Image 1 (cartoon, one colour):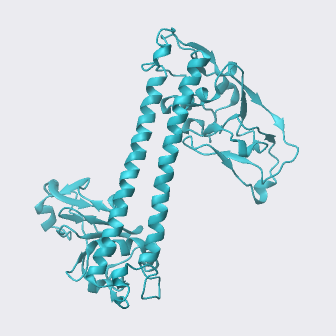
Image 2 (cartoon, rainbow, N blue to C red):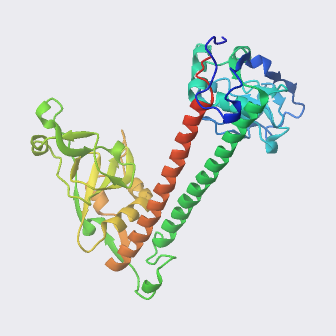
Image 3 (cartoon, rainbow, N blue to C red):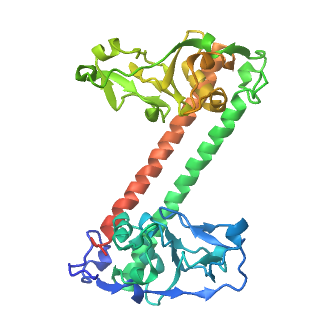
Length: 409
């Protein structure tokens, strides 16, 4: 399985540019399997490997699973470990210090790193999606296909001299620390938003929120209304798919699977004016709130362009007494009410009349606008942070492709 192609990466640190090609070794030459039987057999001290290179974590086995006759082995911090069934999906990692002495079954084999190689370099080489997914061709089994240890250790790996391994590993480790810090910022922002939503809206059965802006502290209780009083609801429809003249027009036509973000602008499929006129679909104005009413219930989005929907969406056009962004956030934070109102034997659904009957508590329009502005600003900050994280992930992906030679098992 060793490659014969010249092994020089596209991107190389200046001090190593004239140090020649990399050598190739079997993984069995850089890793040795560790099989120390566990004497404790403690179900509270077991580990598993998360998919997509998210690392190793504690897993407590319970019930009959804890009493399994499967052999468990003692693992050490710093060992490489992988899931036989899911290596090709990125189920591997290096055991952290806090899980030293924990156990895993033979389904999660572990390996010690041999001397004169940098462990993190080997980990990062295997972290290339093109590398670990190519392992699927070597999995065996009729049901759950597995990658056994013998096959894994026969895979080959390109190896530069130790100093270059350490340079690559150190660089990528620093990038991972930066990425982890940005991901933590994103998590904190999302947690803050969750708490804000809980405090800016009254809880069920209450008429005042826990948190109120100073200028509205003495503005009295919020008013209880039905969603049907907030605006007008419109159902959706699907033009006949047998009529080609009804499709591929310029009118947006959204389905529930597209209602995932705060705003929607352009649909995957579009219909013609003729298709709109010959179906129960309605042309909705900019600012309409689209609410999923079938299967996945209560997901919502604000339309930034004129559109129509299929019958799996009920759309609310808010009247002038209410702020549509405030209403969107109220629906977003009270999705469970829509789910409770749903019914159906084949699949869950909430109809228009049930949606219209849902009670909503709202303040005056100026306070609605203040809350909407606050949450919108926070969402923009979250989206900017999410994009930053995604850009870093893409940057890392590109570096992995360029810091290692193009290589397949």
